[in-house]
Image 1 (cartoon, rainbow, N blue to C red):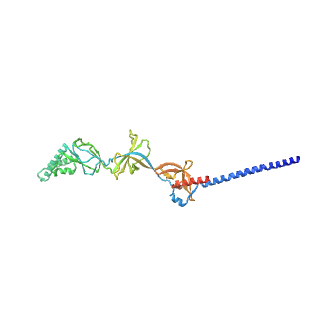
Image 2: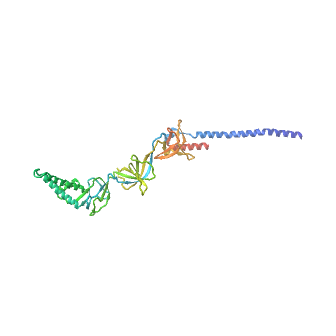
Length: 383
């Protein structure tokens, strides 16, 4: 019995002696087993920050790379605008003496050429001036045909002066040289009647009279405007500090059409009612699709004050943390994402910072590379 117990104790002691070693060994083996995948995942993640593409993939996806260089950028600054007739080429038609309108020859919106008849009027003052001209012109012709010894020099001067004064009076009343000459060459002249002719080619923009109406001296009857070049009055906020001068250019947009314009005048006063300042531009209207009174959108082209780094909008992608990034091409023809700070928009370009000048950046096809990058990450972590 004693021997049996002694053998049992020895057996148990041996078992207890080797058990910790076995447990420790198992634990160590378990730790080494866990460390190996962790090292592999880290290495794979580092490798997965790069995307390698074949030349065929690059050509198919139309991937384009450009060198990042600082440059002056154009920013588009918006302002609402309205089209107006060009005040430098428009013309107001008005009588130069109190008259009665006899006949109209044009209508509102009609295009006229220089020299076309516009309005025929009657005026008592015009009748007196025409009669005085006819008498003085006849007298001057008679004296010119007489011998110098017949009349004194003073009589000749009086006759000539009276004639010239009558011509000047008719010119002041609005008669052309042709209309004045017709007074003595045509037999059917009606004294007092005269016609106003178009001094410029253009469109009748204002028509404010009726036949038989009595009008006063200087009263506006018609307004003609050459719409070949129109004014655009852009309204900017009084708090707008953008510097716009006569060297600035702009784009004028009306519906689907875009026109180039240039600044010709900038107001330095604020409208007390609208609290805006006016910038005047001139736009070429060769296709005659723009007309005075239309509302348009004006986009001023304002250059940046210093050279900036910028990429196309499509070159910018967001990572999983919603940070902006671009793809950079390294020396081994591999693409890797680089975080950047997004800045101000300049048309189709966006200002960025965080990369040095000279970096090779993907400017087209970034979405394809981003898709390949995401797919590569998915494959690594879901093997």
